[in-house]
Image 1 (spheres, rainbow over the protein chains, first blue to last red):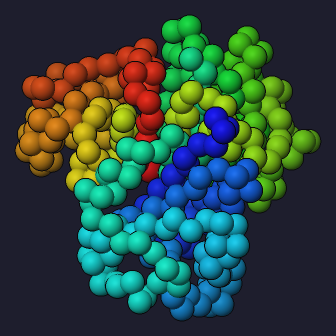
Image 2 (image 1 turned 135 degrees about the vertical axis):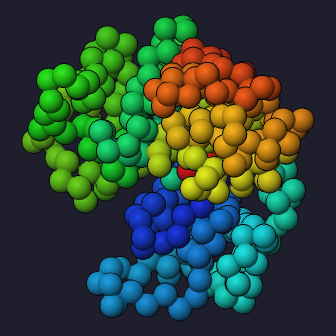
Length: 121
Length: 119
Length: 98
């Protein structure tokens, strides 16, 4: 199947401060609907996207974090978090609202090399 | 070679759309095909025909239109991002069309290379 | 792979993350990232240290626009937009570190 490519979405930005995280997630869902091989990477401030317990009522903005939980319904199950970024922000896997695979920088770099298309927003 | 380009920032505010345009032009001059430019996030503002820069400045919107006319480049504006930001058929510049995010995925599938310009 | 960076390393971690994560290949500095490749900037040492692993290119029109074309560090190569296109074509994938 030459029409299936490996798409990787690299998320380096925190949610709410800008719209990138939300609109990136919209692309991920569409890409999955095209039956592509989808991986998501959360690195640098992007790891904040996955923090449990987001309460957005006070900023009168939609809390889109439950959508990360819906990813598996779209068969998007490859979620990777950069270990160094996670630790640098005082976070651990228990803080995330979905199951992720934690990778070292070297493992992340190797995974990037396997991709056909890498998108970052 | 077949190129796809993604533009994530609006004109004038950020250099991304200038870089994307100059890259597209160089690719065409180098004998490549620029199959599609997909405008996402604030990039959808590249498609507003209401844009009117000072006369001594470049006209970013018209420049895209001309690229589309001269080289059959498909300029696609994401519908969801456009709706959020007030870009509609009524104020869409010539050469652009509004469509879904699937067009971005299709660029990734069909193009040999996909290059993103953003913040 | 071609890694494209567009932010100054003195205000953003994109270049740092790229150099620490990627396995090697081409790095192209465009827009505000070109400041990374100028002599005497605080990131110069780190960029030089990465030169064994990465081939560093700098988009010349962006460095010229910023008045620093005469300050390109040794070991980094100038490219114009045609060279940018060639780098994209020569690498199987490219990644913009946004």
